[in-house]
Length: 201
Image (cartoon, rainbow, N blue to C red; front, side, top):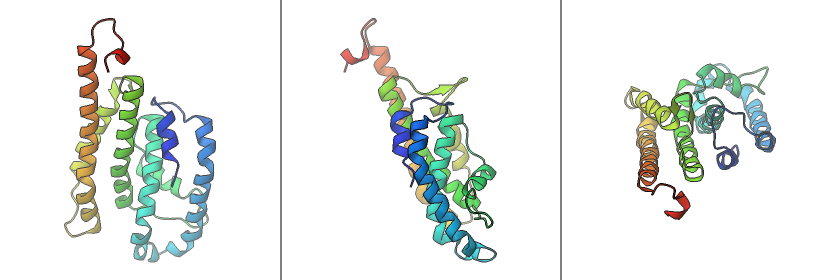
């Protein structure tokens, strides 16, 4: 999939464009994925879109995870379903691939893990939790946790089963950011005035 780790290692702020060096490095992966979408799109038309949707679901979820994570880094907002659908079909013309609401939501569940790693890395290297305009990553994650936890899927469906698997992981990811910020705050409060962080480790 996309080289998300490159974005994670180099980006430490929100609401800024991804550095061109990373965009250029990831271009080949985007192109490869779009070409694969274009190849399978003709076989996913009409009833086949639903008949074989489960077979490509994991791939769409992975793509949604990567696309939504990059969108969050650049805008500190959640990519909309319609924008995600359009992104998937950039290279699939004249056919299109249907991004189901299920795959969209499950991809967002996975994105929480990427945001968690980004937040903890940023705190470890920069000493603060990224955010702008009165909101930080933790506030966004908490709001997302509430929204995802309120989802109601019919029992016995694929969506319900997948949510049951992803929900505990998502909740744990948010808790990890909470604990990391707590640790950062406590260490900062206990550090003697005028003494740098590197001398207190």
